[in-house]
Image (cartoon, rainbow, N blue to C red; front, side, top):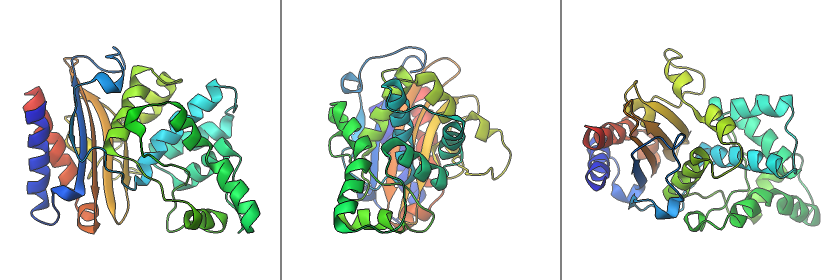
Length: 290
């Protein structure tokens, strides 16, 4: 695995051609004998891993939507929320096409703190406290890989407005690490969190790979899945802004061998480069799977 991950990182940097360096890349990688969705290899903490800046906290862009998906399943399992047809429609859009509107709606459903006009100081503090419920749930999992993670905000096309903008002025922005991304996808697919089959169905990227050129909410082109052979099954969630390009993916080969990769890049050059993440995946798979 070490050789495969190192080959992936070198391929990514070669594709970048000096536009950005290793200090702007974070990676967490794991290999397994069988698909996570079929055979639980145990907790993330006991897995052999390769990391490069894996604990570095980075703005996650739309990768945070994978965590909000897990929170929805957990809150429903705990009886804190009953998902209705509109919620399911929003989940499909949040994960399938990475809809920011759906994410904002669902974060309101999770916390009761919906977006709206600006608030006075006291009301804003109550609103932010309510928004903290997903973060509180993450902390309750007591997973070392999630140390330093912070998620209370939604994602937006251009900017948050009203109370959502105020919240970013009084609280830190969203933060995730490559290690945390890999740990969350690992626990989702191995069934350590409620709703594994439901979440895996949404995270499956196979439908988008066969949707033809330029599918809506494309999370293939320019991301890890772009470098994964068509014969592999893939579960993933990508994120992209003017400053970031990320992807976390679990994939399994026809022979059952599998891997989990989280690759996060930051800076305008990294965000704009569509060849780096696919290059990582191709080199990693060539070395690890032959």
